[in-house]
Image: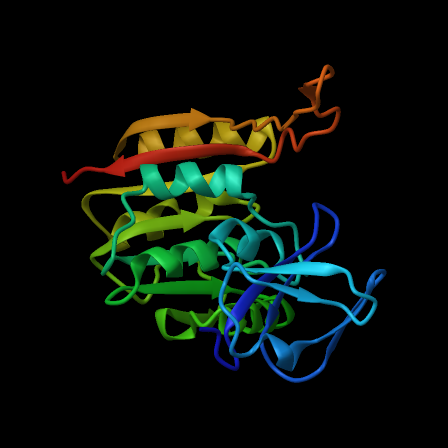
Length: 253
């Protein structure tokens, strides 16, 4: 049963779908409008009609939709990159993780989803505008209890120690390798995303110099397929290069 304030994914087709809350107000579409209060009391999987009689389906939102539909003030990390970060970083319920560069909160959303109920994401951001936007996105998704935002540019060290994972998403990734090393538990991992070869090589060489091992660089591609009778083929457009992901593990001296 859907209650007032629940987050829902309202779906008609690939172009007409909305991530909204079940509450007062109207959702206007090119097929008419929907009274959002009428969603309250229904079940996930049921349909609701617009005033013009067109059906939309009330679906349970998944993490992919939450990431892709955040309000953006910055470029975001895409699910294709977030997925491999979550698996290679060993994120688990109860983990304590640091994120440098909150951006719009895309990765923050995913991290918070996986560290709950006993963990915490410490998200550092130097731009007040970006931090406020990321915070609103996180609160909209009901994940505010699992994220502590900090309006601060880190230079030498973070406030937290003995954390399970550090993500660096700033322009000069190598500048925070020392800070990450100080905060990580032994045997835990760091990740970074590097848009250019110059950033990538400098980051990897710095990790090697600072006592990290198991350094790995990957680039992730996802290609959607259009399945049609007699003419199935790959989509012509795809998100290609977003950045190279770098992973490394801290070892003790």
